[in-house]
Length: 389
Ligand SMILES: [Mg+2]
Image (spheres, rainbow, N blue to C red):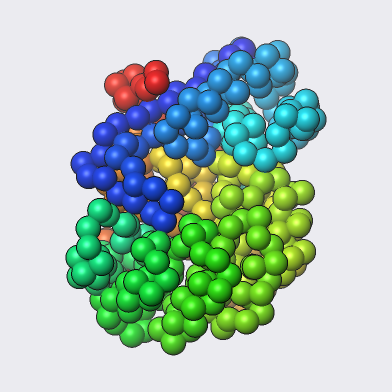
């Protein structure tokens, strides 16, 4: 079996309203779907992390840099292909876009392996520790509005996400440390006591501002405090984890086993959030997962993007061993963005209908059981939203 072509499908659409997080506002949604074709008619699908014009740069890496390296290779030689590409790109980027591009190709190779063997991805990895996964719903994005308007909206949205059936909810912060504490108080009021909420700073704080917000989160009983400081600031992570009772989480901006090794050795994480569509694909994710568990750091995957990314993560969460084991271990959650996302909800020939499942099944989502990822993008949809840049 041989690889005959690799295609990137970059999709883009205007969003119904502008949304924001601590680094920027954005008004368009992008997805980057990778298609690997073979001489036996089997096609694999993958996805690369990276919004907007970053997706166009990654498409160039996928099609112009990686494709010529692996044309004619056996797609079942996933680990060989991974190291061939990594070793040839190492001098040009051990993190960031080259690894995001490799991620989408690697995921597609796993999809092919599943289709060749007739096995779902979670079975290829080693089997399902769970056949359904509970989701947490994030929302509460920033908008160009006053702090007072944010406060009212965040309380309402938090309650609405709880009422949709999600297991927990997650909010953005980024208006400034003092304002952000008020936003967190509003979310606690919105969800009431006894419901988990998490706070995502997208690395907007200095360590001292992160301590100011983190101490308030201790009082409010927040479950985790995500990316409080810059991903390069390993000293900041270590100080925050040692000094705060709230769980410190992060890792979505880290890449490969070598990046994760340093992050874990810094001892700054209570919860690890690897992004499979960025850190090097499934092949590398499995090594990062083993590294996290070797450090006794539980993993709750970072999930972003289209239905291909969501399906990939459902398999990975199913195949994740409990850490530590127990009669009633804390189970990993699926991260789910509750804002409108047509690339997640309408891309597939058979949609996953995550929100419908959450509403009907008390927050639980079934793990796909078809071969490979178990999902097929609709080609007419891919064409309709193609983004040339
Ligand atoms: Mg995040």
